[in-house]
Every structure is written in structure tokens, then in C-alpha cells.
Length: 136
Image (cartoon, rainbow, N blue to C red; front, top):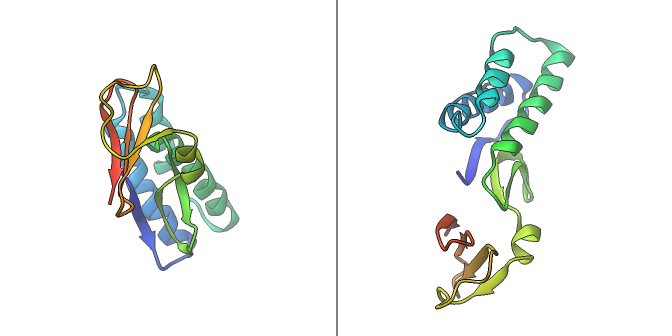
């Protein structure tokens, strides 16, 4: 998933709701990869928080969502808009990948790679040649 999950608010109650909803959905999807992920999120869901405590819980949810981010992406505030939280491409990490204009005839040995076209569309592939994610 790439894109916004919460926009236009910094109210802790709003962020908590958006982050928790997203974390529950993703943890459920990724349960086979990491069964403890869903347990961690459900533990957070089961408590009632207020005030300063809520800010700490939001930070914990941010950490969990960052763990769930696709390779070469991160969870956090958008660089250009601090009230837009979501999953964004990590251009620093992508810059470290081998770049191609077209799909390579021979795959790079055991390395993920990226294709960036003239329109700026980004497609990240695993070393096996399977698409990890793309972004237009």
C-alpha cells in the first residue's frame, strides 16, 4: 500500500483511529508472515487511552505501521504536508537500487532493482523479477 491513510488533521484522536484501523487491516493480511503483529495491534486496540498516553500509543502504532511498510517505503508524514500520514516511497533507499529504463533481459544477481520511466513512474522489483510495488 502506498498513499495517504490520514490527511488534514493532527488531532490525536483522529490519528489514533486512522492508524489503528490501518494497522488492524494490514496485521490481519500479514498474519502468516508475523503472527505476533496482529496480537500487538489487538493489545493496543483493547485499551482506552487519553491525553499524553494517547500520543505514546500513536507513536507505537507508527512504529508498527513502519514495520508493515513494503520494502523501499516508510510510514510517516508526507515530506510536503505534515498532516498527511501514510506509506511513501523511500527515495533514499530506491536511489541505492540498480535502475533500468526497460525490464532487463538478464536479472541482476540477487539484487532488487527499480524501473523509472520518463514520466516518473516507479516500479520496484525483487531479485526474482517479481513486482514488489509500483507508483504512478
